[in-house]
Image 1 (cartoon, chains in turn orange, yellow):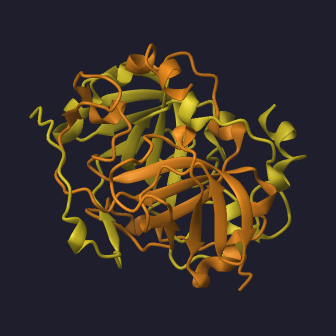
Image 2 (tube, rainbow over the protein chains, first blue to last red):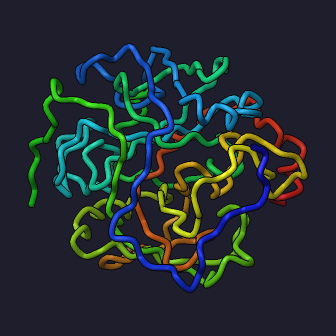
Amino acid sequence: MEITQRELKDFKMRNFPVEICFKPIGIIHTPFKDLRGIPIQASMSENDGKIEIFTEFQEGLKDLDGFSHLICLYYFDMVQLPVALRSKPFLVDEVKGVFAIRTPFRPNPIGLSVLKIKEIAANFISVAQVDILDKTPLIDIKPYIPQFDSPKTTKIGWLKKKIRKMVS
Amino acid sequence: MEITQRELKDFKMRNFPVEICFKPIGIIHTPFKDLRGIPIQASMSENDGKIEIFTEFQEGLKDLDGFSHLICLYYFDMVQLPVALRSKPFLVDEVKGVFAIRTPFRPNPIGLSVLKIKEIAANFISVAQVDILDKTPLIDIKPYIPQFDSPKTTKIGWLKKKIRKMVS
């Protein structure tokens, strides 16, 4: 299964897609059995979780154990579309644009958490500090690489005076 | 359109999805008209780009201009599935698990770039240092929040001795 040839579609046939469909590659197990009490971000959680990769994808986990953190992309499967394009985030009582907040209630309900890897055994990744509903469908796992993913930021907008309180 | 009520599906009806489908919310314009010469990561690019949000989603951009960086999720629409679960990344001549590398050739071909916001005007976001093919379908935009997205990492696996050379 060690194919190294990369498969591309024909560039001349490229069409802008009406719909983009993915198949879950796994399921995320966490202590959060319903929507109450889920931490609003991983950095605020004290609960561990387990990412199960379906066995058909298990060999893709090779070498991930060398990284301390991963980026987990998942589907907020409880969100009913369409969503409001402006709403109140958890932290302030003001309406903000959906692309300026981290609400699950997004036009495409994709979640992103940067999680600490505790252990990888067979097709399970134990992770620390999860902020995810139990049985959430997993879309992708990427290694977290600070040189790519952690720029020198200068502005965090409406969160400026809110965040210190929240993450302490 | 300022709905603040949050819509959820009925928890009792929750079913694990066979397929997860999204509709593009925009299109990413970059100088990279074909697949040659695209920087392998945003941090290595010297080219600006423009993210066009379709006008129906434009009001969701409110307040994003307060942030210096955004997280851009997009669809690698040129990837032909299925992909290999192990392949060689750009930086080393060794086969790695797909979830331990940042290749576009992933079971679910989703791209993630952290990009610097230069300007937001109407439904266009000008961004610095893009590493994305022109006309790429946009799936989501999130504000980059270092307190959530930038953990103290300790290990970057197989990239350890490669990355300094690459990003300098």
